[in-house]
Amino acid sequence: MQKNKVRKAVIPVAGFGTRLFPATKVVKKELFPIIDRDGRAKPVILAIIEEAISAGITEVAIVVQPDDQKVFEDLLKNPPKRELLNKLSPQNQEYSRYLEDLGSKITILLQEEQLGYGHAVFCAKDWVQDEPFLLMLGDHIYASDIEKSCASQLLNVYEQVNQSVVSLTTTPAENLHTSGCVTGVWQDLNSILEVTQLYEKPAIDYAQQHLRVQGMAENEFLCIFGLYLLTPKIFDFLAEHINQNFRERGEFQLTSCLDRLCQEEGMTGYVVKGQRFDTGLPDTYRQTMIDFKKL
Ligand code: UTP
Image (tube, rainbow, N blue to C red; front, top):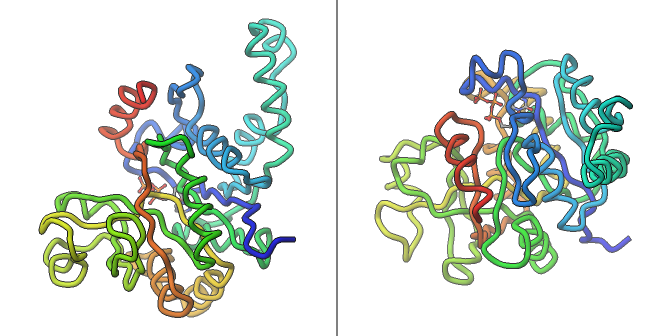
């Protein structure tokens, strides 16, 4: 096997989705419908899986709550009821067959307790084994500005640099509270960054003091876009935080482990040529419904 070939993707979908309560009392946010560019009404998770597969990923693991196992199996592993299948248009019957084939590439893993995003990633350790893997947020979908999909762009960068790659997007200061932020030194202006620090949801003051990137406007920063290409070393740091019960805001977070991975092995940041749509908040979900299909 080629050493830096990326075959596996992990998608954690075991969170509670509190920001979309009360809808998430009955529907997982990763199963909310979006209208994809092919015109189909799809659960968010399916668009994410298709993004991974289109980039050449051959095996996908999704991390779910035990109570949600059945609904994800029904979507991804089980054929529709015969009565429904018979009523579908020929095109949708064909899509249903394609879904069954897609299902054979998917493994469902459990996160028994909801102890945070980092903990959910750790639940995929034994499945990933000793390989680099693509990590994708369960509530973000992507539209590339160029022919290559966003995930595919990230895989290409990984193949060139052979170290972990984090996808980035330029973000105004007022949105820093929504995601992880990075700083570093440009290797290729506005495209490839040697990352020197990652910090989760910084306050604006902290970001202005520590996270400014040369050449960027004073009120603009680089934030995580939702896709990561990680070496399996990340699991050592996650294991350490879990064994030492090192929690941040009550949970086991990913970003502090990414920062340790960056210090130990080095990390590249890549400004993706494309847009991401965060479906995890009411307003951004609404905007996704309006804008996504148009792109
Ligand atoms: P979020 O930060 O969006 O958290 O998780 P959340 O709990 O799902 O949603 P809010 O913040 O309460 O509204 C990022 C990703 O990690 C998964 C989520 O499903 C989402 O795809 N996650 C989060 C887990 O799998 N397990 C967890 O314990 C927490």
